[in-house]
Image 1 (cartoon, rainbow, N blue to C red):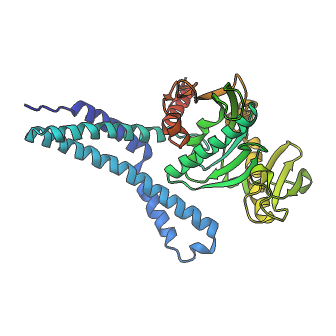
Image 2: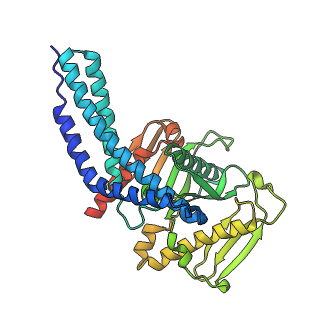
Image 3: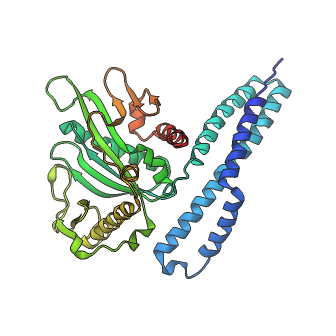
Length: 369
């Protein structure tokens, strides 16, 4: 006789789910959706396109959050019905389906719970990510490009739009650096745990001898700051350099000096942009990132805060937070959380939610200590 008893597991999930609903404040989200829908219905909304995009983006995010939470509640209800049906009909196939759904819901609820931990000052904002190659020659520049693709694939898998702002190609393989923006809610809080030095160990495809090569790349994550336009930067504090955009191997991708490099002389901060079509667009994009970084510096009261938000990352031995092993034992391991995956190919294809979730929980534990 079939006796499927998942009541304790389901009750545990319901308790966590109820806590999530309380933290997310679904009632407040419904009120926010109603307010945003009224603004979106205003016929004059699109007279200011930037503001209209913010309104529609906020509305889409709020609806998505409510739908995601409500969907979990419905699945928990359905799971209970499925268990009752399996027991009533003594159907092993239905019982197996119920066990599979329980495992799937445990992961969904765990992922949803992680999102409730994103309560930092800037966590709700979008993210600007910069990747720089470190020690390791061609392997390092190739690794930097692999990481860039990994994060862009993660954004695509998550349903986010990523905009590449600047790419500096290496003379050999890969890239020296790249900067891209994912202006979706909570991407800064989510990706900020990815900031640090990443280490790759593999048999180098660039050397004549089959020797293991270790290389490094640095990942910097800063929030998209709406207030950046309030930062006043005197023209005398900026050096502007223009040059032709370049592609792989140093080849020029256009015939005009459209790329822009801004150097903030008092702080030494350098921002370059080359992926827009015109010099004016590149300068505006570079100025926005520069303003963001300067605003962060203004808000940082001490060096510890500065390191937390923007960080000084050496991209070399002794500073790595994650290692990628592509020889012998195929493994990707986070050295802070201990989380690891035995299939690097899936990780480099953007399947990094496990690392991100473990990192967010690790950061929360550290802040509570």
